[in-house]
Length: 264
Ligand SMILES: C[S@@+](CC[C@H](N)C(=O)[O-])C[C@H]1O[C@@H](n2cnc3c(N)ncnc32)[C@H](O)[C@@H]1O
Image (cartoon, rainbow, N blue to C red; front, side, top):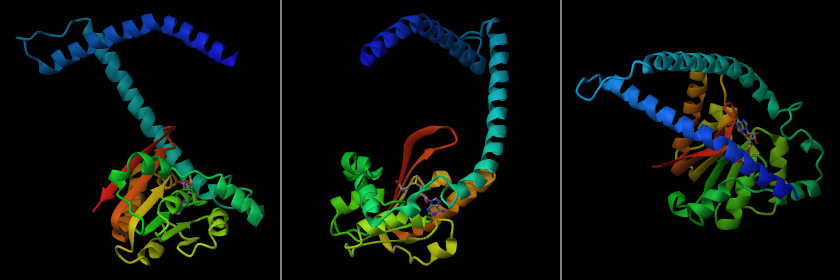
């Protein structure tokens, strides 16, 4: 029944929206054509219509308002989030809030239910990643070990290490893989540059950072870029072959993971 209601609603909405889509398309077509004529400023191909001018002014005004809004919102949000996120994965924060009380059996249950974000890329783009069974891996900000789990099952001969700021999260992977001597996980932070410096250059074939950069936020855009670039520089140094960064953008609400792979 729910499915039928959804289908009917979709059908009715599509009928209602069709005239709007057509009008919007032709308006944009007309606007962009005139914008192009205005930019070309060439009498031989023609001048923009006089009606275009007020639309152009309005467009520029809206663009200016949107940019000013984005700048001010980002400024405020970064300041707030840089403080919130520090607390999110600590005691009193919501990330892993009840993990302290988990028994070893609970930890294993949590581990069994994990799916690593990396699985999608391993299954759909193995040529790009070029990981081989026996290669070594470091998962920076490994959390509960979601990606470690995906790697262990595909590359059983590989040594894999993870680190994370949260002891509670690490407890899951440490408990579940305690009998596997190829796997280790310890407390460490990607913004603790002394800690990162303790890894020799090229210490691991592949480095993975999955949904950690979204949590590296400074009080301004410039500070955020600076912190993230410093982390990337350190990680590139430690990676002998590849650094894979998977992330989304929490501020814009865009959860689609972006993937950056650096082969070197
Ligand atoms: C969304 S979870 C992602 C966990 C895992 N990498 C995954 O892809 O499923 C974010 C993780 O980043 C960790 N984290 C946050 N800040 C960190 C930092 N400065 N250094 C290392 N890990 C950090 C958190 O403790 C948390 O486990």
